[in-house]
Length: 216
Image (cartoon, rainbow, N blue to C red; front, side):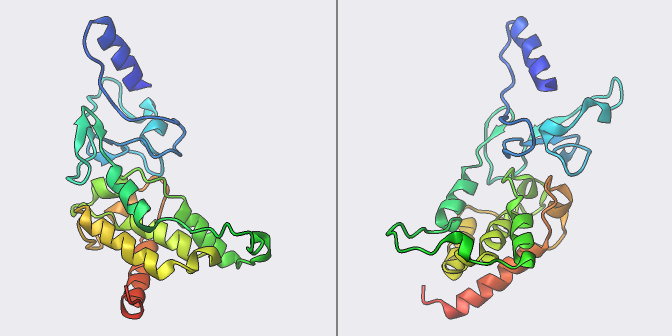
């Protein structure tokens, strides 16, 4: 809303408005991509930019706003960055193939242990905003990829393609030019959904296991 007001004033002055990504404004779409006063999504934790209230700033305080800081997220215009690299990683394997022949098992008949379901739901909370990449000194996307791999690998429907999935998604991540993880945990701190570093450890285990047991 602060940027909306700024743009209204700029338009009234006959100037070009500032371009920025936004959609749901409820912290669930992942479109927010702003560095505010040196932190991804701003000074508060556990929220996205659109959920940040102006009361977190002092009256008269200067607010510094930047687009995501990452070579893998090139700036398109003003505060808008290109995050299509995430989409290409998902296209490489972030899905579950479905048998549409009619000879399928009723999903409700496949029991999922509560612990597995909880782990899957925690990882599925990732909204793909890119804060993890922007805040990482290496520009690593391993928290994002780890969340997607862990989410699908925790469920029986996703185990069928688990080995192939992790190999393809990690390969796509490397091809996009993201850096490696050096365990500084900055991504976990700034993630608005509280995704744990455990998903990176899970992905590493899945990757090593798949590397030695898959012919691809």
